[in-house]
Image 1: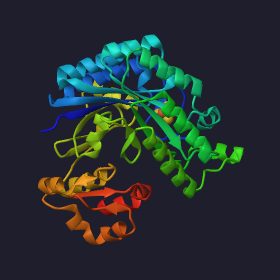
Image 2: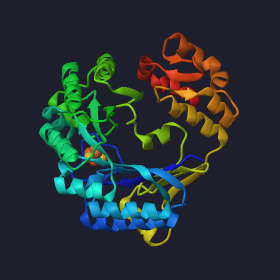
Image 3: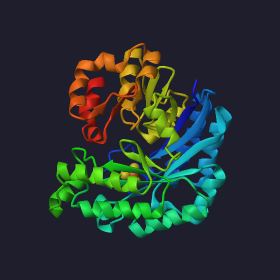
Length: 374
Ligand code: SF4
């Protein structure tokens, strides 16, 4: 049995970005204190003692928690799970929340990986997104993190932004490379139907780049990162060798993880659950001894098989057909041969070396290919 991951959701933000559809809300200090108490109680009550080797604080903006609060949550993880001494412990952070003392406190608490939401190195683009940091603050945050001893840093960038040109995008990629993070994530802006950014785009006369331009941004951004020595390992992620996100790899390699906090979802022993989305509701449920999950559903082998292939195809190495066949009793290429032939002919999918994997062009049309499996 492989070690599991532990996901901890922190839903608070200093400001709400105008494109964001995550489970988040404005910081409320009193609620935050009760929320941390609830997280600790939830972990102590529902943690199942499994061996774990990653903890991931996602949000929201987890860096709004004080280092002492992070330390309490991690201590609860250590007493409730068999947390490996060499665990990867990641915290998502926004540049404007970073201070030297805070970063040193996080290191002392045991956080050893930072994932910084930089999004762009152009101030104009950051303002359009409603972000409250600028590029200089992002650079300063990386410098402070290095001084505090962080040697595993990931930076997020977003592409396909309103008004963004290919040159703007590649300038942000170059600026990222200049900071030499160990890992980077490239996310396509996804605008949900009522996103406030849509109104602002209409008012400002900003259009999204065309689909062809988005494809060029993706491919040229990755090619630039290739030349700088990064290796793409997942549809949206690149890393220096050995610095891939160990936690996120559990999602993509059919692993298991426990989840705590509002809106968090976990997978353990053929059960998938999703916690109630509201922070106050979550706190109340933990305080009264009620189940924090809004939904629990059993995962039958057929569903797990489809998901294992679907998620594995996000990886550059794709899925190992023999490993899937050993686990689920069926080779995905044999099962889906007729649906997949066309993708192979179009150069989107490769089936050599006993694996099933998307090409870079295939990643551009990943939804089309992956739809076969769900
Ligand atoms: S900081 Fe992140 S989670 Fe918070 S509103 Fe902005 S994009 Fe959403």
